[in-house]
Image 1 (cartoon, rainbow, N blue to C red):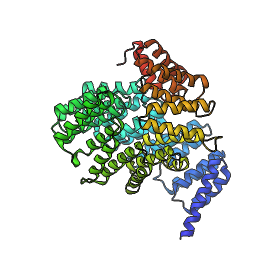
Image 2: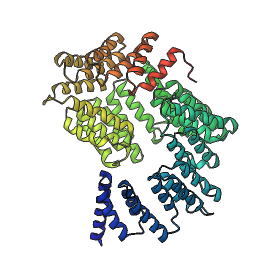
Image 3: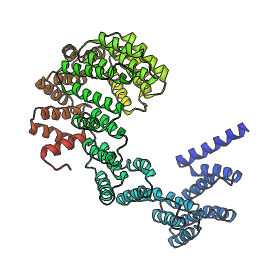
Image 4: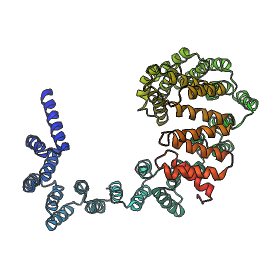
Length: 581
């Protein structure tokens, strides 16, 4: 039994391989044998018909289809195949006759209708396919082929009708919302000026004006989040909350997204709103923590931030419920106050609290980070590896694996770092996958022609110093690379990293000089669009509107595939005074 199934699978694969290569005679020979042995298998029949039609053996294909219809008269979708066989011979009148017969064959319950519609669609007979699906829905009110009809509109390029069909489907049943977001998501981008984004927004707004349905606000919020317009998404989420006055979890989630994307003003507005309206302790504590995160990012008053942490601990204690605050405080102590020993003690105490495996994993990852800051690499690797082992494919395990790779890179163990990074390139977390790809490129691009990796070791050392907030030492190490390894592949990386550090130290002239050198060295370099964008950002910070506008414009016209294109266009238009409603 096993051997016969194995041989069958081999024959199927061989037939398909021949078909894919365009060797239709060989493919037809195998599919003919397979069909004769299994004439109930319509896949063999369809593929055999395709082979004959590719070979222009239309009479053979016709005979095959007609014989099947005689044996299986209920398979009326083969009337479409028969018509299409005539169409391929440019006998349009005969083809149309069979297409009409297929449409008439759809019974009162519409059972055969899907097969007829799908066969029309498979043969790119889109108008007939749409007619078939609509006939079924007319005959059977319980049938719903809106998704197929919308897809056909999309294939025809009638995107407005496609969006309208999807929205009509939601109007009838809101349970389809998530599925429709997935389909619509194939057409919209993160660019608010994209033609389809504008079309979709107008279509939803039109419905919202006549019917205050939750789905319309949810779709608008989803669209604005895609477009990174978090303030506009917040307006929609508030409208939803005011109607239900239930959980604020969606608003809290939006606040987290806005924070991750450095929209601190919207983040502040969101979490202040939650504090004003929520009575849920978890939501209140999370909101206060995120407001504290913003203070860490934008405030230079370290003592004030520390006092805010102490107020939270005084109010809520150091318990399992405040583990996130304790982890955040350890991070603050390490990377802002440079007190890693105190941070390690706090995290080790936190590990003793009763908590689940995911909470413990988060503590261990932060403990590893603090130990790396202290150059205690081997201890850090132990904690990261424990998380990898204990959680396997969970996103926290993937994060820990990246930390192992990064720590190995800091130690100049580039081979082991690469082993970890190869696995992570397919990470379920896009952020981790991107970080893994970036680090892998640094290692690979700067290992060519340098067997002992001298320049890469120096760069990894500078990277570690930057991680440890030893910015001046990091700048000095990068200067050494730029002096001793001029013309090496790592030169642009060193210039870019050093420019970022100059910006941290508010040495803007030096940062600008580095970005300009990257452009001067090689106008085709992978970092050139990044350099132009950073120059725009640099001048925007200094309120030099004319120069900032020029650099954003450079991205728009000279780097259309840049990851910075959407943001550059938004900022360019804003600086130019365009209405961005």
